[in-house]
Amino acid sequence: MTDKRPSGSPTRATEAFFGRRKGKPLRASQAAQLEHGLPTFRLDLDAPAPDDLKSLFPDAVERVRLEIGFGGGEHLIHRAVEQPSTGFIGVEPFVNSMAKLVGRVEEVGARNIRLHDDDATQVLDWLPAASIDQIDLLYPDPWRKRKHWKRRFVSPVNLDRFARVLKPGGLFCFASDIDTYVNWTLLHCRDHAAFDWPARNASDWLTPYDTWPSTRYEAKARREGRSSAYLTFRRKEA
Image (cartoon, rainbow, N blue to C red; front, side, top):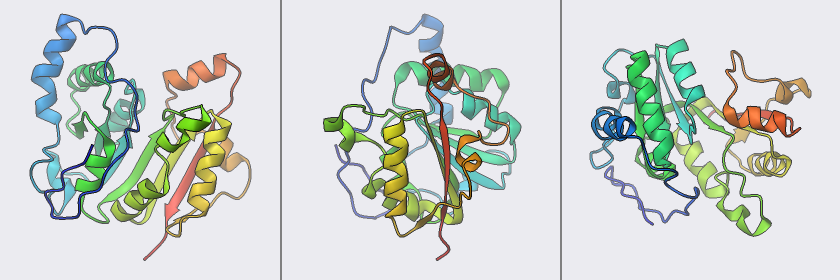
């Protein structure tokens, strides 16, 4: 699969970083929400990205934040309601999750959310350089089998993408309950010239983020006896 970059930047081949696209059939109400609601919030990647991403939102925002793979949408909705002055771009290729999220966006009346229902690398390559204040990658698919680790979203090429779109001083936040993926992410970010890990002691990565709402993935991990790590990396100043 290749991505389209109407801004004129080179096209890059992408991996399939996600698994299946659909689960059980949508209920009629969910299908209707997806059909009629998603176009209202969907990014138009066939048009050039605006120089100022704040213009994507109908109300004035001060910051723009990207969440990759929002799953059930609990975190995205929580943050959008909590921070109305921040614009949120949520990416999720799984149809059932997107249908659920669209319904919740309409229910809470959030006007500071924009969505993409395909590969996150398409959005990353569409965005202008130094345009995002924060990237959240929370409980991504760990691709547990070693032969599938190359499909993990954290990779040198995707960290290059993060480095390009994050503003100097911007944050990349990663949460996972899978030790091998936590270590994988630490090593990849350590080896990338654009990122610092400002942690000073264990509480810096074992304590959830401020006003963390938790997610169903985290609840499942707790039930199965796994703890989580919450890593924050900072984009170095140019």
